[in-house]
Image 1 (cartoon, rainbow, N blue to C red):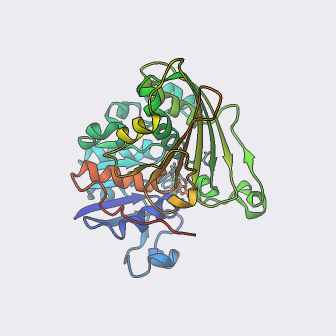
Image 2 (cartoon, rainbow, N blue to C red):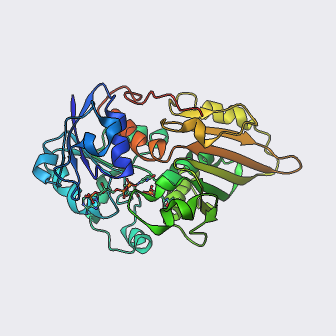
Amino acid sequence: MIKVGIVGGTGYTGVELLRLLAQHPDAQVEVITSRSEAGVAVADMYPNLRGHYDLEFTVPDTDALAACDVVFFATPHGVAHSLAGDILARGCRVIDLSADFRIRDPELWAEWYGQPHGAPALLNDAVYGLPETQREQIKSARLIAVPGCYPTAVQLAALPLLEAGLIRPEIVADCKSGVSGAGRGAKVGSLLCETSESVMAYGASGHRHLPEISQELNRGAGKDVALTFVPHLMPMIRGIHATIYADLLEGQNVDLQTLYENCYKDEPFVDVMPAGSHPATRSVRGVNMCRISLHRPQNGNKVVVLSVIDNLVKGASGQAIQNMNIMFGLEENAGLNQVGLMP
Ligand SMILES: NC(=O)C1=CN([C@@H]2O[C@H](COP(=O)(O)OP(=O)(O)OC[C@H]3O[C@@H](n4cnc5c(N)ncnc54)[C@H](OP(=O)(O)O)[C@@H]3O)[C@@H](O)[C@H]2O)C=CC1
Ligand SMILES: CC(=O)N[C@@H](CCC(=O)OP(=O)(O)O)C(=O)O
């Protein structure tokens, strides 16, 4: 059994880790931290976990965490910067769900996150944990930077076109998110009265996921890709819907459906739907899956790619467990075989 520690167990990604790990055949949660709920039983706080965990939240303690085989950080930005180095130095592996190690350039990170990078010396050890592009590096990694939710949906949709050099290096990513993407902390903007029956764009002139998505699209394309990224808050709890618009280069006659099907044929968590489908976020609720479909609007060289994920699963905790499975040589789908909820 792999011994798991979780820092930040009361947040939405923390409790999603607990939900998914409760059914993992090869992993057991030994330590789960919360400063505000220390001493409270996990099952008292989250009754959906009654019967699955006999564990209390404890304050973060690096000795207890480092005694685990792997520690997940489900914490706000900056926390892994201060704790991960000590835990790694004691031989434990770290999977960070925050953005602390996603951006290779510490100055760029500081610019977008409004604070100095707290652990630049660890950046060389960090592997960007998108299994569909980094599987080999993940196998031997000790520190994983789990991609952001929007970046996961956008990259899986756009990379096959960019890697094949079929489009102009210019992409528009129009994205929508459920409110759980904003975390569990109390904020006026997340209140029911503020979010229901309403749709709102935000960060249209610059969102912190822009440099992360750009970094990875540029890497896939082998050149700079001009990216326009606009996120929207939707009146739903979970889900990301990304619509990608791109221009095919003149004279390209490639069968895009076949390109995508071949690209993802061995990927357990990417579903290329029949051409012309319209994937809905509810089709991935609670499951570690990205569903993609391709469209060629008539009269033009546009290609539109639709991509949906659950922000808390393929966009965070499920993808984090997928990384753990790869790092520890387990079946990649161990503990990740859930079927989605309908309706
Ligand atoms: N929500 C989402 O859809 C996604 C979130 N992420 C990222 O995952 C991380 C967690 O997100 P989410 O679960 O939504 O966040 P929440 O705000 O819901 O939870 C944060 C958790 O971190 C703990 N925490 C806060 N500050 C500290 C600290 N200084 N030291 C130790 N623990 C701390 C909190 O518990 P306590 O204060 O009691 O210690 C709480 O359990 C964030 O970086 C987020 O950006 C990534 C992808 C998707
Ligand atoms: C709806 C909402 O507020 N979404 C969050 C992004 C979700 C997220 O968790 O971002 P990371 O993956 O980088 O941690 C936001 O826009 O900042």
